Image (cartoon, rainbow, N blue to C red):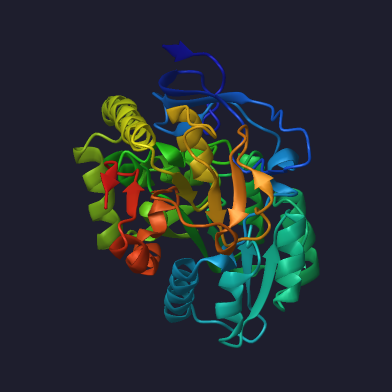
Length: 404
């Protein structure tokens, strides 16, 4: 089925509906238990643009609703901190900084990434619209502007601070409601010899692992290197190099500038995308089929646990868990609670459900965990050795509903 609304990237209307995940709350709408739990629901539909190859969702939940008061803090995960330390090191190797240069982080959350940059003696600036994230960034010693990033914000920063030598964004450049204004802001603020470092969920990796839970309302666009390059060219920018990373279940780090140079690594990745058909709808149609099959398998395994009288808790309360719970049709009859270490989410219900989120130290362990934070399994599984040696089981939903 084709839709006629405009593509977020190219503005044309040749969009094909690939996967309909139903009407869902926006994924971080965690509400205190004492409040009304009637969360608004919005269409969650994944589309492919036949004109510019950009994948995207169709409905936009206003950015003020999603990002001003959400509870995610990047510093709660050690794996992410180690990843950011590595990225900061690679940036320092690539870029020759002068005494007045600075690094800007767009959507820098609590300042975790910039702390590793600042430790190298470099000047830093965070821009984040989240109230909690702004406070946490300042508490971590990282200056932060509490605004959404767009051309107006970039213009104000340039007048105050001058051009930025590096503009970094991790998990933000595909969240942008003001997509073109934000990239015009990047172009305007970037120094002539500056580098943009964009980290994003890599769409081919998402397809290959059937990670349908990466589709949620905060994620408006889904990039291949080819579709991202076409978007950037419209704003006078080019991808010059790229590398893949395991963080978040499969990410790409793109190094972007004003020049036309293409590294051998980037050329190989872009050639692979064409060979494997990621500039066509074919792999996305197959992804939708496999996502439906995986949903049924996850649902069957959870309900077999429950039919056997076993208690199941969700391990972690990530935003992507909302997609899994709602696409699978789970509620408090299936999952007794979700356990978390981020206290901003404790004392809430999972969006659109009566599944409580509680601190992991305040509840007895279950017979089985559903690992919603599956992308951090390498960090989490060693912590569960005693639980598993005592007979506990862990269901890892992505990529193949594995039970350990």
